[in-house]
Image (cartoon, rainbow over all chains, first blue to last red; front, top):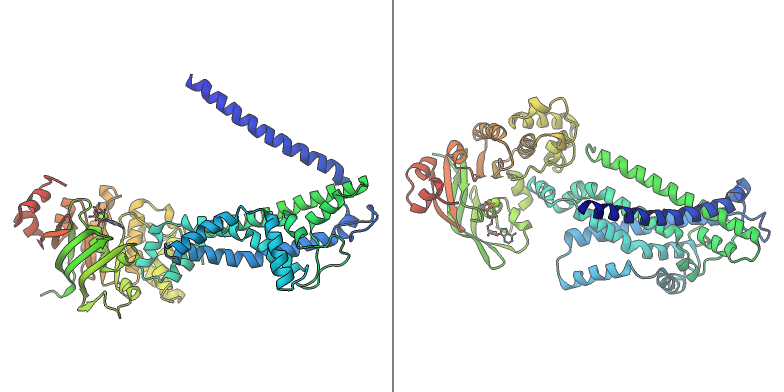
Length: 282
Length: 252
Ligand SMILES: Nc1ncnc2c1ncn2[C@@H]1O[C@H](COP(=O)(O)OP(=O)(O)OP(=O)(O)O)[C@@H](O)[C@H]1O
Ligand SMILES: [Mg+2]
């Protein structure tokens, strides 16, 4: 009786996994089928064009890389700093409780809202215009709650026993954070940062909201240069009527996926090497 | 006549309104082992945590009374708790080595004092591991993770880590609670030797252990110090009925 119920449960779980994998792989197969043949050096090194066979993703790929890097540069220190403050220093009063609840809520706010905020704050009030900087600031705001939540979670897993052990040796609060809490929380923090940045790479709506351009035939040369990004380029190609552009879109999707995967793989490698190093630092 | 290292005067510890340690006065003499005994929840750990101000880290904890360390009130405004904890070390019930290498564990307390000289660190690490009777077991794997050690070895590593910064007093909160009899015996022998150099205050639930190793014993019950005196006084000629019953294992 018990056994057959177990079997039923396992079968159900497997079926659910099967549906998910099947959908995913059919999507992947379609995209690969449509786009793989379109990927070549010309596609990677050309600017967008009115002729689908001459068009490429150079400006959007480079834009995406700059955008993600800049977003990380802004969001990661802010997010980790906030997390350290909230976990280690903040007193348990109503103000901090309110902040905590707010951060949780912010993580669930639709990205388009962040786009509108970015449009109002960065593009208009701060006069960043539709620049790389405005885009990065907007994406940084968007992923900040995720980075904070993940970092706090990672910090919280560092046991109090270890922290007390350090305090008992005469460590100051900041030494405990720098030498015990932070190194031990780092792998977890990085995992959160990776997830958050992968989300940032794929975001389209907030960039459209702040008015990122779709046709850019040059590479951004400063923080204030206009920019485009892969998802926007893909979105633009998909919305064209000509089937040749759809092939370009599929190829763009493949590049976007590969970028995300490479990015994740690199981050996982870094994280694992930190894990094994944490046994023997310095 | 031995010097008084710690002089505790009318000490009270509260957690919010809960009165965990009630009007305790006693002294700890230099180069002795003082055992704190008493049933679970009677305030032994709370009492111990006052001595190196680890209670500062416990939310809602409040302290009244005085603790004089060599004549200076450790709760005075100009007393630095960081400095104090470097003089009064602590070993916890559960071994809590950092998940770093054995070497880095022992060097931790020195490095946070900005002592980075390689030769100095190497010598002090070896010396501390020898004092903690662990050197012979680990000398060839100092750079392996401390987590690969057995429980008893980990506890001795924590002792070595505490000894490395030359504390005057070592506070130990049931250091043998998670160890087997053999590992316990090693630590007891170690304490016997250490007391020639430092002062030891140890919380223990083990009456035989308290009898074996202590010069002085303090018996706590529901937050109050029922009786304290030499090991013989407490175990062989207790003044109070309660002490007699507890040390003979009639309750606890
Ligand atoms: N952080 C805390 N907050 C509130 N109450 C506490 C706290 N720590 C201890 N207490 C309470 O104070 C009393 C004394 O606790 P303490 O840990 O000092 O006892 P103990 O003698 O060490 O017990 P054990 O032998 O079980 O370790 C207990 O009733 C406990 O519930
Ligand atoms: Mg205790």
